[in-house]
Length: 185
Image (cartoon, rainbow, N blue to C red; front, side, top):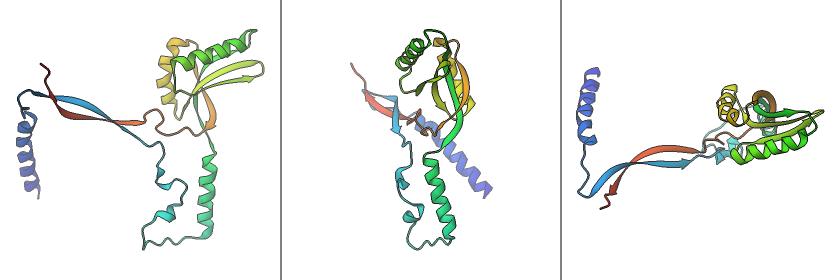
């Protein structure tokens, strides 16, 4: 079996250089192209349905009704649940102009960082502006670098917030595709 696998690998390796060196027809050239495939933020297969409703025919699940009820309750409570995560505080002040300054900081951030969640709050006597919904500290640290260039006093804070959408920042899968293009004269 090992000998057969080794022979197969040698044959495949011998054929690879010929495939990579394939010449395009006259007047054409090979070019790499990026293909963006959108990802679903949430698997919609079970959206609003029970897992038991999509099982194939002939599959029987034996479980106590209490277990099924507990699972349904847990799914329902997670839909409105909160998690401990991280945000970046870009403004924190209590001076006379703090209200206007916090509004200006929020506006400036939203203009330069569209798509990133930003929140303005007041906890007597401080006005605060925090940005992002990061699941881990490493995600927050990665985002802090570019933000610190514009807001030098920015720092990471730990806060509770509603579950952010998965894949919100990276909504696309990127693949490289080799395409044949006509050469322009």
